[in-house]
Length: 435
Image: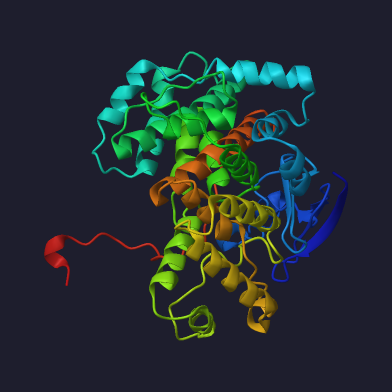
């Protein structure tokens, strides 16, 4: 990274500090404020860290203004068209796309880790029958450290890689078992004759007396959803994984913390909110324009879910890709599919929003959540499993960032500062003397 400097002068004391300006491969220049407190005695104030780089990373790049998303430099559009999720996993973990031999070795090694320790079954059996699937994911992923503690030396590169492979391989089994438990069906063990995505769908929907094989369109749709959600730079859950990992916590604990963060409706639950909104519109006696006007009304509490993004101020590139798959999948399922009204309503909302000056001026474009929920619903996946699928996809991104942080010699335990606005020093008063 090339280095310039900016000069900061304290007009009260006259003290001056030179702060380095760091140049990344892409994106805005970044001021290194490390000397600001030491030399001038100031912290910076940035609620939500919207203008603060918490780390340097080589994994994912986003340009929200232009609507760009790249994994290790590769545009998401190219990966979505030509790659598979498992190949993307290799790319995110290792920094390069694999050749055929490396990919085969990678896939075969993952297949040696797909089974769970049989004693983990007891975890699922101990949950209440209506437990939320994400609660089970938080608990069981965190519990992996109790079952796979032989190689969790976070300072050893080989141990870190083994943990990464275990997580990528076992989380699909865990996610499928969560679903099976919630619907009261027997657990299905992985069948390593299948590829990664087919195996997951087989464990989700297979039954002992049924020779289930997912359709190619289902496999492709799920593969694409996983690719598009595999990583997204320093979002809330990824930052949580990095922060938890910075203390030296084992990777299973760090990812469990990330899953907890993802569970929040402002993060991983957005596609579920889209489905709820579309169902409300479909079941109402109002047309789409009524809801468009409500969304514009500042006095109304109604919000169009699935429009706009914290980072993207342009059309979410993932939404463009997944929109076509949504069309194709529902087209194959037929006009009488029960999800057709949802999709038609979504298309009408999108058309109006993209042509309406109110949305254009505010850059409220459809995001990936706008379509992903419809696809998952069309595949027969219930709403309470949507965020679990997200966690499955994001596992490789989380573990890639965790590995990057743990191998960084400059990394330190995360310790954000604060602007204290509470009481100044007060002296203790005995309870009998208080007003």
